[in-house]
Image (cartoon, rainbow, N blue to C red; front, side, top):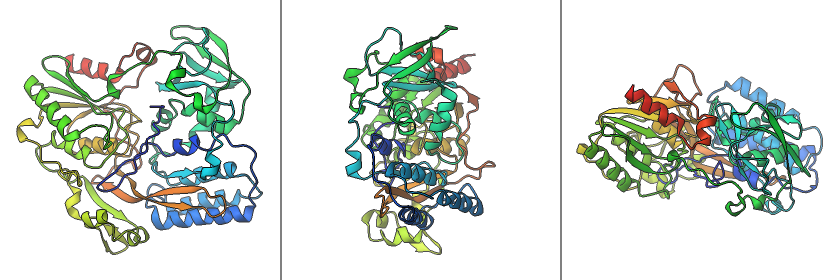
Length: 490
C-alpha cells in the first residue's frame, strides 16, 4: 500500500461501495508531463461549463455543505480565472479546484490515456515516503540511493529550502475531503503521495536537499537525495526495513482475559470472506468472555456496502435505521433505470429525485451479498471502544456513524475522514471534457445517515483525542490501542 492505495472502490448500492481516495490515481498518471500544446481560453471555458453543468444535474453534494449562492460564486471565480491559453496539466489543476468546491471526497478526475503514458519517464521524484504523526511528517521509506545520513523515522522539516509548512500550503488544497474535515488531508498525503504531489506542484527538480530531525535530537541535518523515476517506487528498492502495525491487518486476539482486540482495516469485497471472519471473531470473543472490545477501524477506508452493516449486527440486538434517505438525481436515474442492480434495490422516481427502496435503509440489509442474520448468541453486548482516524472513510466512516448514532461505543483517536451524516458516492457517471479530454467520474448516490448533527460536514469526533505519536511510530506501537488499554485498566 503506497500511503493511499492504488485500489479504488467505487461504491454501488449493492456491489462495490466506497472509494478510498479521489486524487491519487489521477496524479499517478499525470504528473510527468512534457511540454504540451496549450488550449485556447474559449475551449477551456466550454470544458469548464460542461463539467459544472454535469455536477449540477448529477452530483447531489454540490450544495450539501455550502449554500448555493456561495458555491456559484466560487465556480464563477474559477471560470473567470481562465483568461489565457494553458496546457492540459494546468487546466487539470483548475478542474481539481472545481471538484473541491463540492466538499465531497469521492469525485475523481483523470487525464487521457496518451498523456498518462508519459508517466515516470524522467528522474524527477523525491525518493521518500512519509507518514503524518501528531502534527509532523515522518520519513517512512527511502526508495533512492542508500545514505547513512537518512534514517527511518526522521522528521521532514524542509525541501530545497522551503519549510514543510509552506509546502503543505501548496499541496493540501489539491486533496478534496468530505465536508470540512480536519484530518483526512494530512493522512492522505502519506506514503509516496507527498512526493507525487510535490512533483505536480513544484515541477521537475534535478536534486533534493532535505532538512530532517532525528527522534530525540535537538539538532537538524541536511541530506542530499537524487531524484528517481516513478517506477522506482517499488518494494525491492526500499532501503529501510518495513514496519507492521496491528491496525493494518485483519485480526482478532485476546489482550487479556477480559479485553479483546478486533482490527478491521477495510470493507472491500476482495479483502476477505467477511461473513466467515466475523463469525469466527465473535465466537472467539464469546469464548473469551470478554467484557471490553477494542474495535480498530483507524485504517478502514471503506469497501462493499453490507460488510459494515453485518459487523454492526454483531454489536446491536435491534435493527437500526441507518439511512434517512438514499437518493439520486433524475438524469442519473433515467440513464440507469433498467440496470438489474437498480431494479434489485427498488429505485423509483418519485418527485424531484429518485429514491431507493425503504427495505435497504436498515442495518440488517446486507446488499446482494447473501449474508445470513448473525447468531444472536454471538452478539457482543459488553463495552465497546472504537479506534478512528482521518483514514476512516466512506464505509469505515458509515460504520462509525452507526456506532455514534446508537451511542454504542467510546471513540478514541481522531476525527473520521468521512462525515457523520453520510456521503455522495455509489455508482458514478463518467464524463469526458470535449477539448482537454480530461475524464471526471461523478458519484451520483446520496447516502444520508439518519442523524441531524449540530455542525454539518464534520466526521465522527473522538471522545478521547489520541493521535499516533512520533515516538510510538518509531517503536511500531499503536498509540490509540495503548490509550484504550490504559483507559480500560485504570
